[in-house]
Length: 300
Image (cartoon, rainbow, N blue to C red; front, side, top):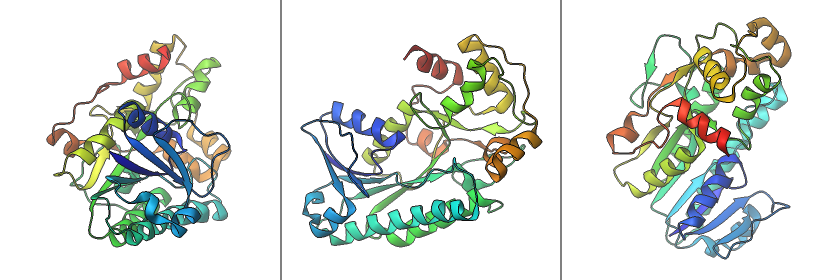
């Protein structure tokens, strides 16, 4: 199989690339520029958007396009930061659509990155793919606009909008920052601790993307979250248990807001999201519960 990954140099993209290379697939990683450090593998090539626009033939015959590109939400949400976050997502959707339209034979499926923020936040409600979008803050506004752009841009292909929760991995993403206070001896709940954390292990993320491609009946929104979300308090206690560190030092909401501004919303607010569509189509999680997921990360 031949796959094109936009944003393949990122946290999820690197894991997905290794997963597919081990399975014997051919991978093209597309980015704004070539990375300084490139993995050397006969099945892997790196291209820029500019080079592909001049010679789109390199992507002919692809079995799927996966678009993971977009600036991280984990930056201070200044007006300029918000602009970068929004524009980066819309620009990469437009670039991916332009590539598809330049091909004589489009890949039959596009996996477009999205996020569970589209449901808004709640301490009480549970969300699945049938739940409506609820724009109530900056993250939900970004994701709603992002998905609308994808719906308009990708025509004539099966589109999967992968609504991702917190992806747990050691190299990057939110988890290294979340466990750092525990390593320093100051781990504890954030805010009330009652806010929900919908998470997924990095290995299951790659497997789910592959599953969505291989399952023709899956389209539209797909929640990329494990079937057992936890509260912030429970998550912190499990970090303490698995890493043998104390869970005792609460971080008041007002201190977090003072430190990072609006960005604190993604730590102090949350949503309980279930992967109903993946389970309905027969996907089996390697790490459906938190403790084995954290134990695997600790063993790496």
